Image (cartoon, each protein chain N blue to C red):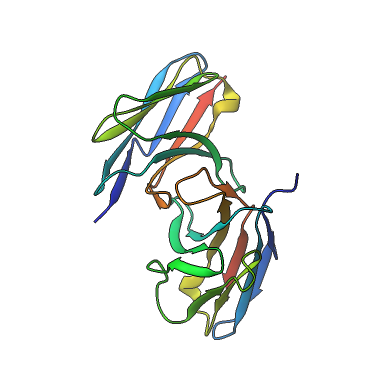
Amino acid sequence: GAGVSQTPSNKVTEKGKYVELRCDPISGHTALYWYRQSLGQGPEFLIYFQGTGAADDSGLPNDRFFAVRPEGSVSTLKIQRTERGDSAVYLCASSLDLNNEQFFGPGTRLTVL
Amino acid sequence: EDQVTQSPEALRLQEGESSSLNCSYTVSGLRGLFWYRQDPGKGPEFLFTLYSAGEEKEKERLKATLTKKESFLHITAPKPEDSATYLCAVQAFIFGKGTRLHILP
C-alpha cells in the first residue's frame, strides 16, 4: 500500500514569503504529526493531530506557523513571513493512534533565501 | 520536562564488531519508547516499541532493552548496511538527536 507522501519534495522561497507544505498520511491513520529536522539533529516536534483536531500544538515555534487537517486525512503546514532560520527538512508522519509506531514521509526540504 | 539524551553522538565500528547505543530519558509516566533508523535523505523508519522496564525486543542483528531510566540498542556482528542514524523517542514524539553509526567493511 501507499506510504506517507509529502509535497513538494523541495521548496525554495525568499525571506518574507508564505509557504504551504502538504502531507498525505496512510489511509485509516487517525494520528498525524509534523516535525522539523535540521542537519545533525533529531526530529523536532511541531504539532500532532488526532482526527481533525490539533491535539497538541505545543511545538509550534511561534504564530507564523499553523497547520490544518480539515477532513481528518490530508494536512497542510503553513508558514507565514518565512525567515532564513525556518530552513530545514519538514517531516510528516502518521500512525493508527498516539503511541503506535509512526510511518514517516520522505520530507520537504525548505530553503529560505 | 520530558527529555531524551542519546550517546554516543557518532560511532564507527568494524564489520562484525558488536556494540550498544544508549538512550537516557526523563519522563512523567512512560507511554512508550521508540527506536527508529534513519538513512540519509529519508524519513525515519520504525524499529521497536518498548513500554515497560525489563522488556526486550529483537530484529535480526538488533536488540532493544528498557530500564526505568534508559534503553539500549544492541547491535550484534553489524554489517555495512547497518550504517545509519539511530533515533530514540519517548511519548510518541519527543526525539533524541540520534547516534550516527558507521560500519566499516
